[in-house]
Length: 434
Ligand SMILES: Cc1cc2nc3c(=O)[nH]c(=O)nc-3n(C[C@H](O)[C@H](O)[C@H](O)COP(=O)(O)OP(=O)(O)OC[C@H]3O[C@@H](n4cnc5c(N)ncnc54)[C@H](O)[C@@H]3O)c2cc1C
Image (cartoon, rainbow, N blue to C red; front, side, top):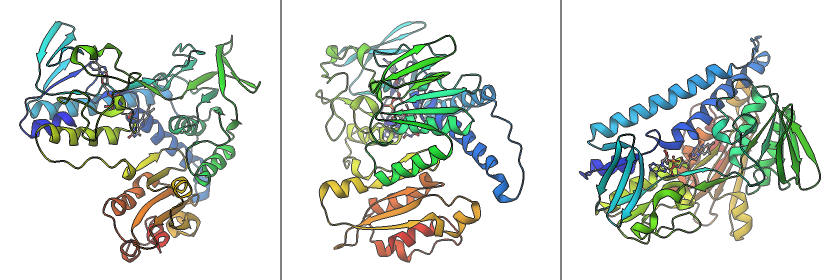
């Protein structure tokens, strides 16, 4: 995004990429995981087909075909992005970049080193899954998310370590595909930093689908056995399965950048930046996961767009992280923007909170997807919409309406008076605002 924005502002841009254009988001993160989610959602619909009046074939997902689909989507998106960049005149270099001075870098490619001089630079080298020192990833049985897309066969029993966003998405995927799934939850609820009611809705769904939740169990070892793996927890319990997926966060990829040559300081590998994404060296910016801020693709893109404008001398408004819409692509989907229940409790601020269950929404009932709710938070004095949480079918799409309301500092009355289609899921948003 930074490259395309800068190019549209007539900058001469060179992009050095070690892997595919589009980055980890295309290859290992957002796109492949959501491609798997798309298949798992269809699996669940087929499972619930009886409810809608027809019997459906429940043959299992062919993981090899799904993996091929994932690769095709990633490559197509990457090629399209490359074409857009090349059409804009961006010079693409397939290679690994590192600094050699404050205005100099080198890209190591298959055909040798290319020396580069720059006025401005952006570091957006991303992150990789964190591997704890008690596990050795073999890519076959002991996995990070990067190895989870090409397993060939549906795992018989997947043990997931980590109940944050990534962990719960993969629990939902493998449970839908018919794997037995065990989830090690280090605290007493999944999604430890989120609203208890949201976590409860997800746990309820997991339990219904036969997922085994081991609460208060922090993994301390993962070892291969003749048949699969055994994972031990610090409370003395252990669980045996066919595979284990480690979903315990990420580490920044800055080690091989030779940051010292450019004078850029890091903090345990993360690069501190100011509100305009500038590092301690004003002509070198950093964006995305390397900055240690909200690790989302949407955030990285917006940071890139803003910093490119800033670097080209335009005035920009700093990104307001409190208004970022976020989603968890489990079933039910969970999405939120702005203020959340946990923030209300923590700040002690007077907030009007209204909630409507999807069970009272006619479209939800027609579709047989009544689970979940919409919560809207507003300021009782100014009536401004401060935030909202949606749990349920298509929450990741519906949240856009609340994101607009929060960004536009809309009054709840505007939401209430917006005439939505009937029957539609969006009706619950206007109702919840009332
Ligand atoms: C399983 C999973 C699912 C996710 N799903 C979502 C989602 O649905 N929505 C969402 O918003 N976020 C999601 N995220 C988070 C999102 O993927 C990251 O926040 C986002 O990719 C960060 O973008 P980035 O530009 O910082 O880094 P990346 O997308 O990681 O890109 C960094 C690029 O830099 C390249 N690179 C590294 N070092 C060098 C070097 N020395 N020289 C040249 N190139 C180099 C890498 O090859 C990589 O392509 C997910 C994360 C995971 C792990």
